[in-house]
Length: 120
Length: 278
Image (cartoon, rainbow over all chains, first blue to last red; front, side):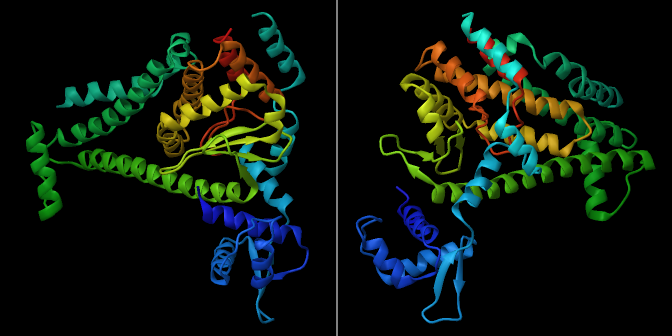
């Protein structure tokens, strides 16, 4: 089990759920609550996860305040859209992908496929 | 040596166009995808090899009578900067051509592999953050999207199979098993390695229609190969239904590689897959 990855996911879920930025201590407390991961983590662990996420551009660090505060770089839906974009192909043209997302196979072709299946 | 060069050149030409044209869409290959894949790999390998060796022989023919002689001549050119006796601008041209082609193919392979590896790492990072692990199926994760999506992300150390919540809702237990076994076959049989060679070939020679067709055809045969492996575990009906349901839902179960790696399966190819299950 990739526990570091799961930890990153828990942190991102918290940041995505909060419109305001959070400090590492806020996150540490929230992660310990039963509705999140329910894990008691060292502050350094949380900071390590945050800096990893920052390096990968998922998290933005606000350095003007002390302690530093963190927020999600973009909303969850946007990352999800990126992912689906990749999964459904057409890496170059975003609109073509969204179109394909609705109708990968035309109705007529779908009908042919159904006939093939029904005929077996 | 000239005769050998010409023979190899003819083989290269034969393997670059007429033979692959016959091979594409061949029904015997669809019936036996393993054999089909083997033949395609031989075509690519022998084709590239005979092209390069033919150029080398042609270039060396003017100053050498046999291969060791040719090798000595070329080695002296590299170490002593001495042109072998009898060499002409044509021999240099042919030899540089061979050198260029070799370097071009190898560099493109390297770039393709590095690029795919980077894409894979990025995608796997996104998947880690956006999907939940399935508790009863190790290595399988679920993304919360209504579109029926199933694909795998093969990796050197760990491979992830990704299913969508929409897919889980649409498929019954055996259809789901069919999808999972199909993806597991891709991972287990390292289809990604076969595919990356053909992708690199396509990237290296974009002007050669054969390279493009070959990577499409190989992708399709890999799907059929995975289908056949899924059939060991599930019935034909379940697999055919799973393929149809997912393709109608706007996503394709056979899209099991990242966008650049696997060409979009056209309905024609879908039909070919379904017909062999009928």
